[in-house]
Length: 84
Image 1: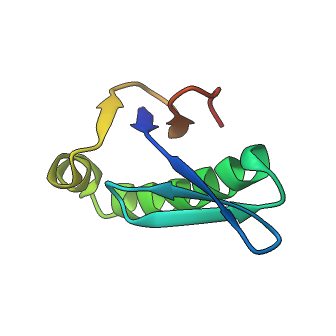
Image 2 (image 1 turned 180 degrees about the vertical axis):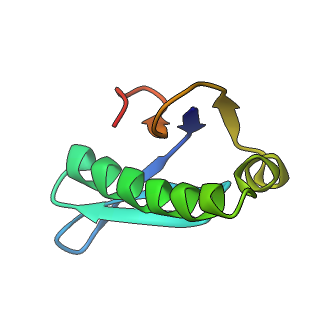
Image 3 (image 1 turned 90 degrees about the vertical axis):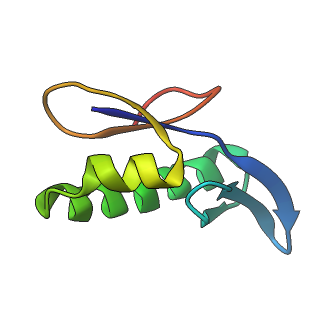
């Protein structure tokens, strides 16, 4: 499964914040790449927990997050960047 998220980037003290408006999750880093990577890790953890409970599809739908079905591990894609 590929989970597609948008991110808004903002400067913060000491770095950059990547925020997913739909999921209300953030990642922080020294630059936009490391902030996006941090956000990807947070979203993956959230998705993995919900997948184990069999609730991931419903949660993604409820939050308005787009995804593409697929086999294997969950990939989180910050639109405009590659997958993790």
